Length: 414
Ligand code: HGY
Ligand code: MN
Ligand code: MN
Image (cartoon, rainbow, N blue to C red):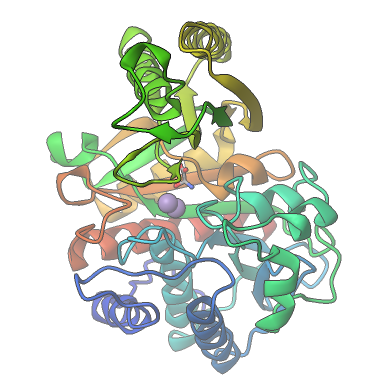
C-alpha cells in the first residue's frame, strides 16, 4: 500500500454528499429538519452506515446511539484517530451544521481508500447523538454520556415537549446499540464544523484554528399567574404570567449586553392558554447564558436569578427555575492544534485562531481524549437557520485541512 504525503480530497464528491444527505429532512425553504432520533435521522444514519461499510469500515453503535465507523490501519495495537461531529439538526436547520464534520471525515476516508493509502493508526468517524439539544435537552447529550458527564439512564429518560423519551425513540429507529457508552475507544478527535458566526468571513479567512469552546449554561423557567378575563379584569388586579416573562426576557437580554463578549438568550417559550381574551396564567421559557470566562458566567447567572425573582415578586407571579445544563469553558489540545496549523500551511490557506461561541461535541470529548476543531466560514455568519450556507471551496478547504491534520498526527504512530 502506498504512503503519499500530499493526498487531495475530492471537492465535488464532498459537495455531492452534502447535497444528497440534505434530502433527509429537506424543508421547502432549502434547509433541513432532522431532529435527533426522528425518522429523518434514521434515514441519514442508515445512509452513513452503508457508505462507511462500502469503504470496508466496521460500524458500531453504542447504547445511546453514538455511531463509530472504523477503517483499519497498519497498527492494530493503537486506538483509532477519530474525526467526528453530528447528523442531527435544529427544527429549521441548515445543510452544514454538524453534517459537514461527519461527511468531511467520510471524504477523508474515501480519499485514502481511492489512493490505497494505509495509515499507521486506524481512523474512525464518530456521529454523536443529540448534539443539538433542541428536541431533547441538554445539548451535546450523548457525547456527554460518552465522556461520563451524564449517565445513559439520564439520556434515555429525556423527554421532548410531546412527552416522548429519547431511549424509546432510539429503540424505535433501531439505533439503541449494544456497546456501553465510552467503551469504543479512540486516541484523539478532530471536529470539522462551520463557524456559525461572522468572524472568518469578515476577515476573509478560510480556516479557523479553534482553541476552545466558551462556557454554556441552560435554565428552565416556569411562571404561574392567574388566568382571567381580558375585558373584565382591571389592570391593577391581574397576575399576568406573560407580562412577567416579557420583562424577564428584556432583563436577560440586558445581562448579555452588560457582559460582552458573553451572550444571553431566550429561545423557547410556551404561553398558556394562549387565547386572545384570556390574561395568560402560565408561561414556560428557556434561558441560554454563555461566556468564555466561568467567573463572569457565575456573575451573569447571579444577576439573572436576582432579576427574575424581583420581577416575579413585583407582579405577584409564582416562579420555579432550575439550571438544567452547565458545560464549562474548554481549551483544546495544543499538540492537535499544531497538527491543524501544519494542515493549514500544507494547504496554503489563510487562517486565524478563535474560540467557539457555539457548543460542539468536541467540548465534552476534550474531557476524555485530546481534541480540537477546524472551522470554515458560513455566509453572513448565519446558522441555525434554513438559509445557512457556505461554498464548495470552503467545505473542501476544511476537509483538506482535516485530512492533512489527521495524517500529521498519524505520523506519530509510525
Ligand atoms: O447550542 C449550541 O451551541 C449547539 O449548536 N448545540
Ligand atoms: Mn453543530
Ligand atoms: Mn447546531
